Amino acid sequence: MRLAPRQNLPLLFLWPFFVFLSACGSTPPAVVSGLSAQQPHTPAQTDRLIRLSHEQLGTPYRYGGNSPAAGFDCSGLVHYVHARSGLSVPRSTRNQFRASTAVPLNAIRPGDLLFFRINDKKPGHVGIYTGHGRFIHAPSSGKTVSQASLDNPYWQARLIGARRFI
Image 1 (cartoon, rainbow, N blue to C red):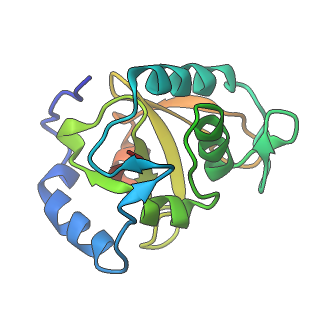
Image 2: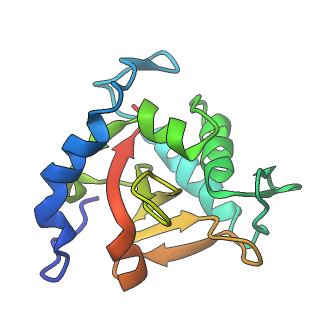
């Protein structure tokens, strides 16, 4: 699936600038979980990843949480659904960002990760893109795993990029 271009998303025009900034700190590894950085998820892995993400909707947010029983924080949700889909990813948002490969926003597809800046310039939040401009994430204390839209001005203003574990 491709995200339809947006007329009112000025961040897209700055995309190459953000990619340069995010890539200058470290180089992502060439291999993650035995898959080459040039190979996409298998369709079965992507389907399972999206299905498992949807199954977590309504699970309470819990800082440091990484299971349906304990609750999830944003990176714990990403870690959990990837592990259950046969993909090994780091546990923290920062390490997920560093270990994944940048994807242009106009080429994102279901299963890609969306990273957001919340309080500073570094990635502080992550969600799983599910297609049609929507993503699943564990937002914050007092809330539950939910689906959000990239059309929401709050998320538009904080989006720093899309990345992929491939």
